[in-house]
Length: 317
Image (cartoon, rainbow, N blue to C red; front, side, top):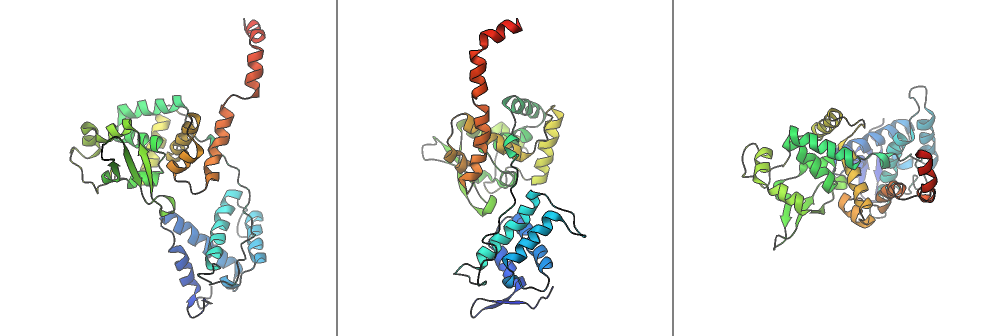
């Protein structure tokens, strides 16, 4: 790849590497930066000697087609993987063609459509019974692991947000009638306030629980992390505990987040409330859960079965 390619926004002249790094500087999460950089470099390899600033809609469509059909060197990819490779390009060209940045004269990705990804996450939740089984098992095994699951289910936290939680992130109002968790550095580097229910607030302040979470000391450093472990460790804990207590589903921490959304909607929370709690930028993301919840509610076959209750009862007898 020619490292001397130049892109200009008037007086400033940047090489492509500088442009890529400038774009990535707008993101905070390490996973996002790594995945976006990988997607950009893969596209650069595909277009060869064509500068990024001169790529066309046709180049992007050819690239998408090669991902879908595969090449002699690479096997075909599924829709979800292709979307994860194309979405960063759309963000990159939208950013670079913005009037305030003006690195590109046009946005070749403006009409590039992402492949339709089948949404399956709506079924990735635990039932009330499964959640009870998991929490009962963990309460006897480890208070720390039990509290991890309690925080994620009740507050709808991402695993990355859980492991970044600090004791000082929880604050109360002047009358101590309510508590809020400041969730920082979540997806997109944004900050949000999540209401902490009274029951969880009491657990959070319980001296005996703090002793077990803080290595034998009830005195905590407000800047100290509540769970000083990695996201990967939490994933292993949740998956192993689920298997050990007899849950057949491949449970991950994100399933607990889905469980939060599903239970909240089933019990009357509004879409906007769930969106705010989970930190979704777009309401469309939250609406995915609504379809699952609607399926759980009373449907047409239920009304028919009720009208036939007498007939069915006689047959069963």
